[in-house]
Image 1 (tube, one colour):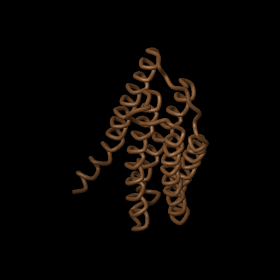
Image 2: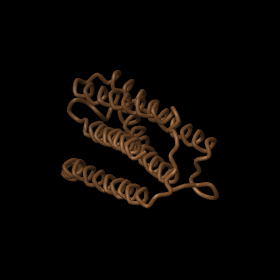
Image 3: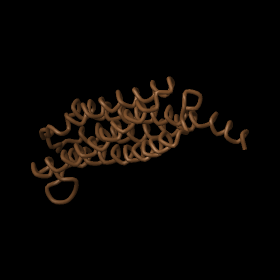
Image 4: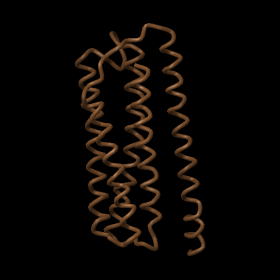
Length: 188
């Protein structure tokens, strides 16, 4: 059993990196599609709601709290790790709320995902942000599992791979959103 666990631990990071590269390729393909579609014309220009900008601040803050947890597990400061993971969870859920509020504002401004009155520019924004949000929910599930295991005493300075993996994935999600945010601002 111990050999199986050691093998799992050795393959966990490479598997995470492979999955993140696959996810990045999906977003690279979609952002390439935005560039190609915009060049065809008939592209609706619209203002981004304030929630779109607030989401960036929230996700950056969540990177700091996740890093805080990762740093403190290496020093066996479990109480701080629990607090930092909970803050990260709250910030992740707050980010999801800003996405909903962004979509609600866009809809009120006549920027629709599909149907009469929709435009490719709005549709791409909805698709990119929704796809990122779905990946974020995967990160939230990983975060919940990590919080649960931390409370159960699974992690310590000698065994923190789960927190490290969660941190890597969370930072990936953060950098992905920053990329999408900057791309959407630039292409807009």
